[in-house]
Length: 282
Image (cartoon, rainbow, N blue to C red; front, side, top):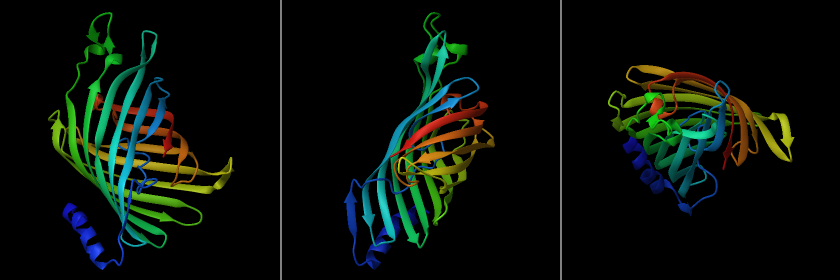
């Protein structure tokens, strides 16, 4: 399948009357998947059960955009993101307990057909995880709960297919992904994983705020990971986006997550969290 993606541009160029390119194009070819924790964003998620915070810092950048005609394009991009767990301990607030880091690149191909658009995205990502000083008791010179840092690493390739539909009243897209890790640590991690989901949004219910459209949206993401047995993870979102749905904006949302812990240092712990969050679309 990857070979088909690489070959496709050559086939398109040979049939196209004109090829144009843009270096450092504005915006993003494919917006990050809203309910996936492995997408770049800047925001904060507040967990009501224990007042912990998930803090996201990252961005996905399209470096080069190739247009073969009005309906077909390919982008090359970079992905850099991290998210951290912020906790409180002995009166010290916002202690960074654990951290996940991701960096890599992507190639995305899309075809526009009337009000529908089809995307294929291939990403290569390095993911590593760490316990940090917020999980360390300096007074007693030991890790909290007698935990020890886990040398967690995943180097993986991911292939994602997206079908996007827009009309005058509603936008929605659904997607599916498969990934394979060439390197995993600890060794009880399975190398294959799959995920799928759906997003829907409309700006016809609330109207405009400060002359900007306001979208109400829902999103659901399912992933199947082997740690070591394959078990499903579910993430639901309901919220508002102030701004164009496919443009810059601020998102406020409610979140319900059930599954393996999203911080990889706690990769084998099952959790259930209701949270309130926001993030920014660039």
